[in-house]
Image 1 (cartoon, rainbow, N blue to C red):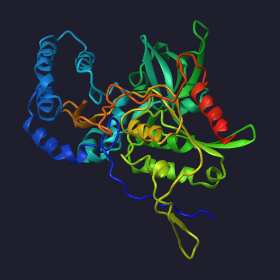
Image 2 (image 1 turned 180 degrees about the vertical axis):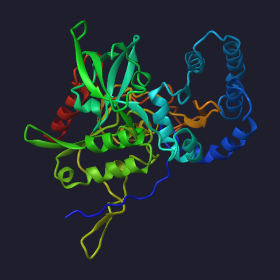
Image 3 (image 1 turned 90 degrees about the vertical axis):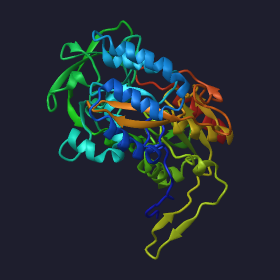
Length: 413
């Protein structure tokens, strides 16, 4: 009987959407900077933070010219223009987020250990980040919103909403990720969707809830673990919606060491995450050369000190795979495991988080990153088996997962 499982402690680094690559590096400077700019405008805040933290200082003169142009033009959408300016730097882990963005809440939740006191003011009384929603994350494609992620144990999961659905309106008003649900917590809204291109408009009644972003990502990762049976074989499957903290590493180890997974013929590891994360040694449980070690107590409790997965492994990657998960993908590909899907995001620099005076959130890349001397930023990790995945109107189908299953069967045979 499998007892309690304890994984070894690891040091986590802050990549986009993860807790802590630059937390220790930048926390003291954040506090110092906040005091210095407490009475300044949002533009001066951004100038100061970029000057003190942005890793590529050669780009700052042109950036500051663009920032001044935005500052001198009051008749603009500030968030859109700032992010357009940040995009011009052609680097990841940078962005300006407001309470109208789902990313705002998920990033605040991810970095909450750094901002404990400030979050108690922003989300009184306990500082737990929450937002009104139904449990989906979307992708904006050609001006239209499509469901990209459906979180576990949320109203969306219970309302027959599928990945690939086009989102049209909420109670007759244009869909938006957060604003459309504000003031409607506890109420049932009518969500208009389109499942087939140019097809009929369908309506779903969905209850709006206050959602905790850390809980939705954790529950979705944990609940994704299941055993898939095909052609007489069994495959363990888990999707890492995030790896932004030690709890995600524990979920991964607990899941793949469960009785049902141990009896499976192979493992399918899906790292098409909503966010990145992953410690730099995340791949060690699959590629490490040291043996698995167990401590067994008199009560037959088994403590895994150095767990290793030794059966066949197939990995699914895509444009959703970013940051620390890309380093994990690089390590697994280098070890020879088949990689199914499309090239990863190419977002591998170190980001530093800041909450501005108006409550908005700013992420700045503070360090460049090399892996084996190579720069993954802007390049990504390519698959060994290319399988495209068109999100729009996909009706919940996942050709990359299907190919991964077939590949696992091929390996076993």
